Amino acid sequence: MWTKNNPSKLWTPGRTLRIAFLNGTREFKEATISAANNWLPHINLQFDFVEGEEGDIRILSEEGTFSSLIGTDALLSIDGPTMKLWPHSANQARYFAANVMHEFGHMLGAEHEQTNPTANIPWDKPAIYQQHGLSDDPDGDNYQASVTRKRLHQWYLDRADASESIYSEYDRKSIMHYTIHQSWTVGDFQIFPNLSLSEKDKAFMNEAYPFPSTL
Ligand SMILES: [Zn+2]
Image 1 (cartoon, rainbow, N blue to C red):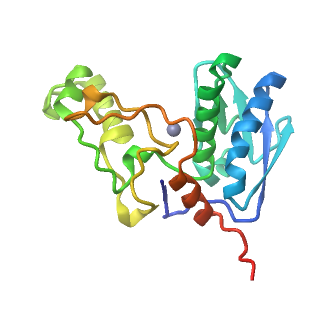
Image 2: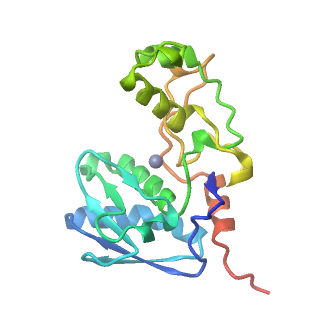
């Protein structure tokens, strides 16, 4: 797991985060709370879930998207949602829960694991470019191609700078890892969907949000 350290986007340990549901069915809210609470045993923060528009975090139930602002960036957003969750039917409960844990990971400050400073994914860049209609040479890119290439680098290929990050060792089991198709890598490397918090996820967040030491 990793987070940026300059500026830090971590919340102050011990704090209660007020988390407001802007909309959504009762089922949606219950499933969200249940999944999000998987973080609580590992962090010295409290979640106070409320209805309405006033919260440090504001969740919108909306089809088609999962997204969240990173950590305390939520405080820079005056109104509107800071997190969007895509309600799923009960038979997709595990995937919904995994996505909620992932977005709450962002809300706690975490970035995507495939860009961890110590990630060592054997990317097959020519194959990835080809699958997106790109050549190996960025000089020939038109506008759309340059946007696509930039996204691929931001979301997958470029690792974060270690000097600007707080990180634990690269963890292919992290809830913050994207799935990676085997055709994107050299050899047989691939990442299947991670459906629960990994041991390193728990340990990292426990250090980011430490409980007071009991003597
Ligand atoms: Zn994400």
